[in-house]
Amino acid sequence: MDLIANRISHCFGDLAVLDDVSFTVGAGEVVAIVGPSGCGKSTLLSILGGLLQPSSGAPELRGQPPADSLNPLTFVFQDFALLPWATVEENVEFPLLHTQLSAAQRRALVEDALRRTGLTDFRKTYPKQLSGGMRQRVGISRALAVRPAILLMDEPLSALDSQTRELLMEDFVRLLADGGMGAVYVTHNLEEAARLADRIVVLSRRPGRIREVVAVPMTRAARGEAAAREKLLALQNQIWSLIRNEAIDAEREVQHA
Amino acid sequence: MLDRAPAEIAKDTATRRVRFRGAGFVPASSRFGGWIALALVIAIWQAAGSTGLVNPLFLPAPSAIARAIYRLAMSGALWQHLSASLLRIGVGWLLGTVAGVAVGFAIGLSRLARSVGITFISALFPIPKIALLPLLILWLGIGEEPKIATIALGVFFSTAISVYSGVDAVPRNLIRMAQSFNVPFATIVRRVIWPGALPAILAGFRITASVALLLVVSAEMIGAQYGIGAFVLQAGNLMQTDQLLAGVVILSVFGLAVGKVIGWLEARLLHWR
Image (tube, rainbow over all chains, first blue to last red; front, side, top):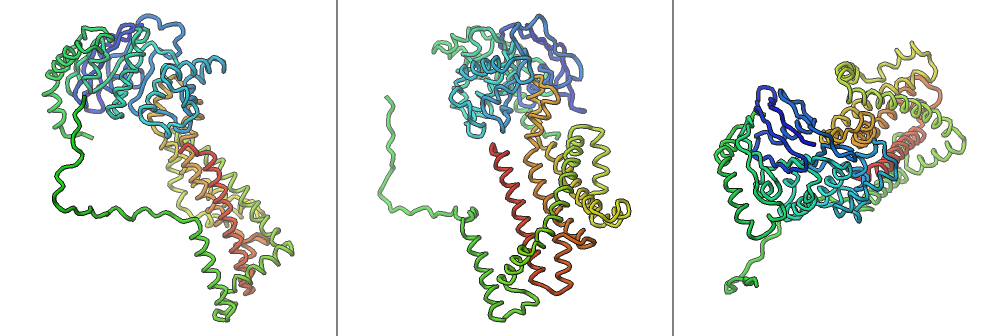
């Protein structure tokens, strides 16, 4: 199943935030969206996932999702969006409750999702008892439980400290390794983008337009090797040079709110 | 290998300790402090009464109040008054709460209910509900109904306001999360909005419990044969201050008990906080 941004534009009132953005995420592909702050990255992701109605253009799907997918487009949120009154396993089960699945089937899916994120021992704990990294693992586990075709990840690591980010990045690489699941990964962190993405969509500052789509010419597995490090760094620098001046302008801009 | 840096630098000059300046601003309540203070006040009060320092007509000693309560309990009058008040509070509070929760949710969830509801609530909420008692007596007769209706009205407005504020305060990101998983409306209300609004709803219960207590006493003072309010008024008219204060103590104990119950409910239902 492909996810297509078809000429998406969006305004909040008078403020144009996205201008005619088009690209396609192929099945199993990981596309990162980067750009200066306020360029509409997160807005674009909300539109792609059907949580926000664009002013013009539309998100579209092509082809059928895998038969066992319960929620083909599944979000992982920056702030985790966990139910504070529910335990880890209740949070993971939450998106399954309204489905046709039997209790036993639900339990099997929850079990599998908890195992894949290393949360099995934490099933009975509440979100407030967990560190930020473990909370985001719950968010990821909940996403995995519904067997997504494409993960929509909205700055999933930016609320975490750098060591936790590193650990979760390793998890992401592992989860996306087999190509069974695609992802749109919104980030302001170019290193994350270069580590994870097959292609990187670079947006301009507001209103966000596509500046460039950069392909990362390496398999994800190869990027962990020492030899790859220099190449990735060069790629990051290349992208940074694309957005540096705009990031400066964006930073100096007076907020409209 | 990593080179290890020295932990200390030059040691030759005298050192001064950095002055601690982070003290205070963390009041911790001690377990017994409150009880000791209460016992102390009662003891002084008792002493003042026993030594004749205070005229018992104006302020009877705690022992006299305790005796009055004991006599009331023995004679059965206490239960007669208390049960009359409890019935009014119970029915009135329940009616007001059920209606208030329903209207509060409607205002929190529907645009139409919001625009209509908030207008009416803003207009009617500031009216002291006891002022409506004479009108309610005209409408409903002189029985229990106008008293119950007064309490229900007072409870209703506070509840509706705290419920819709609670619904408004449910984090938007949780609702969006649920929508992103195609969770249906009714499930979102039951599993996201209801638990998310519950802290505000229970906090509202504390307020409505005291509103109900205030209104039952006022209504009973205006016109009732039985009830703690009627009893306190009678005792005052007869200058039986020990009886009067006995009624006040019973009200205070009742208020405390309700507070405890709500505290217990909060501990049970909101343990996740």
